[in-house]
Length: 197
Ligand SMILES: [Zn+2]
Image 1 (tube, rainbow, N blue to C red):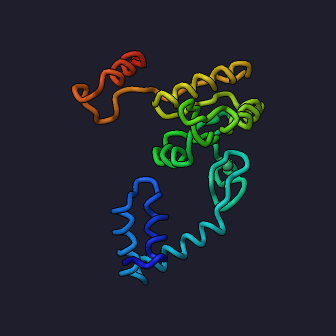
Image 2 (image 1 turned 60 degrees about the horizontal axis):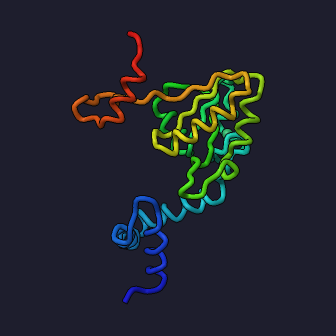
């Protein structure tokens, strides 16, 4: 019924994070119906991304240049190295505009279940960068998941021989959040991380 070309397109899109076969079919129909407005610009953007985007050899982020624009930025605080799981975490932290350090992308977190060990992550390059003279603080900005916290604990041990302060993001009440709606884990983390006003 459906041509193999269209079926292949649906299958590729259905494997994308957050999409399934149903949304992939809708997307393909939309792209084919709106060829000029949707399909052509998407094809061009994908082609450009494939040709121009590279991984930064220092921080393992992605950009059109290597070293990436953040690693080249002279206005960054060289004393602060922020460790994240994925590139999307850099984007989130940059959107907050709350911090101007350097970054290091691990490429995931340790996970016994998924068979991810230290050698699968960018840990040895992190230790090399953290040992640089300028670095004073390593901020472990990892997700507040069990694997994220296991990884933070592992990294704290590995970094303990270096003369750097190791910090992590606070866990607790989200901005605009109401106590009554929080789960017990979040609330007890917020109590443990309470600060003096
Ligand atoms: Zn970089």
